[in-house]
Image (cartoon, rainbow, N blue to C red; front, side, top):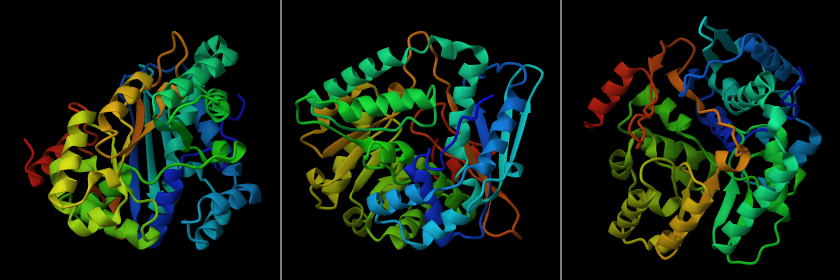
Amino acid sequence: MRQIINHFTDDDLYKFTMCCAVVQNYPRAQVRYTFNDRASTVYPDGFAEELRAQIKMLEKVVITDEEIDFMKRRCPYIPQWFYHYLRGYRYDSRWVSVEQDADGHLHIGFEGSWSDTILLEVKVLAIISELYYMMTGLDRQFDYDAYYERSMLKATRLIEGGCIFSEFGTRRRASFQAQDSAVRAMKECKASGTGRFAGTSNVYFAMKYDLTPIGTMAHELVCAIAGMYGPQQANHIAMRAWSNTYRGALGTFLYDTYGWNNFSLNFSEDFANMFKGLRVDSGDNYDQLNKIVDKYRSLKIDPQTKQVVFSNALDVDRAIALNAYAIDKCQPSFGIGTHFTNDFPGIEPRNIVIKLTAVKITESWPFSETCKLSEDLGKHQGDPATVDTFKHLLHLS
């Protein structure tokens, strides 16, 4: 089986920026992650064995001078010491356990130092997605020339529709080549309009096509802090840790880990002025935007001076409609993932996630369970008892 991940920076920027913040703020924290296939997919026989082999291959993937030089040029907010950390970083397959039960379902767990294991999530998800199509033979249906043209049409419509948009699709891409085709088409699109292609979350493709790497953080940061210190003040502590690391750069905060009401209580005027904007990743996009606008206005801040990034299950039509609604309320932009990188006719994208489920502050502490509470009903992530405990602590029904 050919190696799927061949480049250290074939990963989303937010994993590197979070890793840097973790090393600086929580260098001894230990974590556990759990894989969840929301569709309960039956994987082909031998899938776990092939996946373990692919994860073992990661041990030989190291960062290159070219990749470091690119990140230094395009990501000036990352402190120089972090590149020394990345030079010495090595993946270790012993951090990951992979099993496949008699029904063909996958069971995957991750455990180790947070600063180490944090760089596995996106790569492993991308491997699972591409490996599934390889082992089922579905990849033989992929027409990459047609995919390039379809991606070009998407970019054209978004630019003509006035949307500022980025490609966010590494985790559930159909293949490395599919993401390459999509990013290349968007880079080469010459459509006229007030919109523009802002870049890609994938650092390798940003380097290949000389684009801006896009991304800040994920729910993982807030979830881990909630497991260590409790969910009530997790957003507050996360914003402090983030500002300690980046001093105002990367100022788009992902707020919905424990719902709008909890975040709003933590989003005081100093934070609202410090952070450039917020990212909407669950719930009704229009309802969430209205809450954001009202919050800024309550703090006597003009919401039109603030960025709002939408990344919640978007496609071209939804982004164009949402942009028309949001353009006079804020500075909207759009991060679009699976719709860009896994949109072949007759192919069902994998509905897979890896979530941090337990954490401890240092090696000697016991693990504490944590979870994510989505604004979308039915998408809470974590042990049901932990979800109930967190909902009780946050006064959620």
